Image (cartoon, rainbow, N blue to C red):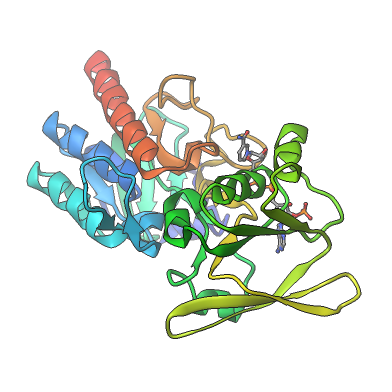
Length: 328
Ligand code: NDP
């Protein structure tokens, strides 16, 4: 029996319902800047890549508004438009871009097997994993309402829109401290909302936060609600350790409570770190399995930018091309 790893962790179910199958040279799983860039390079190298877009075609950038830091767009561009541009560019060179979600894999043999939507089996000579990561959110209804109009999970992407204004960052780890420090250079005031009485971030990062005059750390505070109107966020209601309410006036609410790399189905075959990020050979996109490459946020917990994801997508396509060339 094949060693399929599925989201349901039920090999019989995932292999039992296969209706169709096909063989491809290069399969790309995921459609953010990493996946589409890999598709552009692989199709131009005549590798006839097939790309499955996943549950969120275009990836995390489709949840942001303006992107102003991707080179080549002097006037800025919206996340969804940029993803459409990357997709059209890949299609132009013949990449076969399809809707579908990888539900299980078997990377135990020389031919790599991936099941799409639990029913279509693809056998690929090389697989490029570009499944990204998902930002964690608090789970408040008001947070959902203001996503894209005041609520963001990326200060580097969206901080600029709050220049000179007061904002809040939630979280006590390195990301939250880094985002608060970054925002302190742009915004008039930054509240750092931390649920514990201490920060979890590295000492150096903590010290930087503590000595920045316009960052106010609110220890032992939780967010009860984000408030605003048609024009966006204008405040947040917090609860302290005694359950007392406090309202802060802010226009931006940045959630920095961690990311979850979308690597679950690969874990039985592909090495990850303790938080699930796929480990690649430094300076390459190679994983521990020959012919399986990883790029973008699923293997990057430090930079997480569209441009770095795109760069690593290029690396994955070039690594796959070299691998296939050496194999044939
Ligand atoms: P972490 O998991 O380290 O920290 C998450 C933070 O969010 C914690 O303070 C946690 O609180 C808090 N949190 C989680 N859930 C909630 C919630 N529901 N409500 C309120 N607060 C919540 O994630 P990071 O993204 O900060 O870091 C991930 C990894 O990446 C770490 O290993 C980090 O060191 C690394 N990193 C390194 C950087 C660098 O070296 N420059 C930069 C950024 C990240 P609690 O402490 O109570 O659990």
